[in-house]
Image (tube, rainbow, N blue to C red):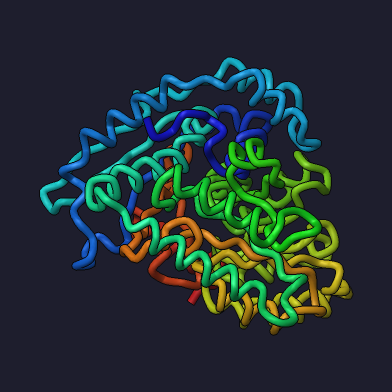
Length: 395
């Protein structure tokens, strides 16, 4: 059994789920799976593994939150008691998920149902697909090579002038395996130190945060802003509606805004002086990170906000050398945070799967993400996508 706890997921699933419970409990959604590098010669077909994937999802749906897990969630200042009470009754329902083998060798995964009851599926299902894939394709994984690569990363982090550089683990969804994920985290804690005194800031994974005494990290994901395309008053105001709904729930806590659902230009048009002051910072997840950072710092200055008081989080396909490069560029000009995913938890010398599960519908209407990296775009309705581009002035 790959997933043994419902906490084995990213924190932002809980923070978004709480907003859904309080503000959008009747929303109906649909998610779709995509493997972006399925056609790569280094990637084996997933279709032969479909039964194993189904069995793991079935096992996932037998899990319930344990008392200690609920107590841990309740200890977080931004998690409300009624949400914890709801989670005490919650379990995932297999009827909302269908997994189909395709003639192409790929698989189709569809998650469809109430948003409140389907939002937790994404991360554990992606982790399941990854681990099933690698235990079938790499029956004797080269763990020594993985450790050697991790050693190189650690030595790079210990370079001159980098003592204040901190990284975080964002790698649950694309990890090689749960066991390898834990080994990576334990090694980082031992070698670079965790928390305020070390270079390892924490993890997005709630289970490992609880288990290893790490800080759990995360705020919002793309699906939250995408759903607001259907839930808000009108499409053009959906990004503003999403940020205002978030602020209504958390009252200044969890103040990192996601900037790339409509691209950086559209984000900056909506992220006015009010939001610049209200939110603690923003997260980068597509496009050129250096250019993004420069634009955001300039935007803060134009809006009479000192960028040194704001946090820029970089989380798009980072490696340690890229992280160091960005750190040196922006050090002292703003607060900095770096979330490393695949390169941290799935770097054993094999080509990792570039898999995602994205929301494609909410309340029966299409929703879309139009990021600054075109390959990350995902939408089922070409006409809606064209309309979205027009409304948000996306070229």
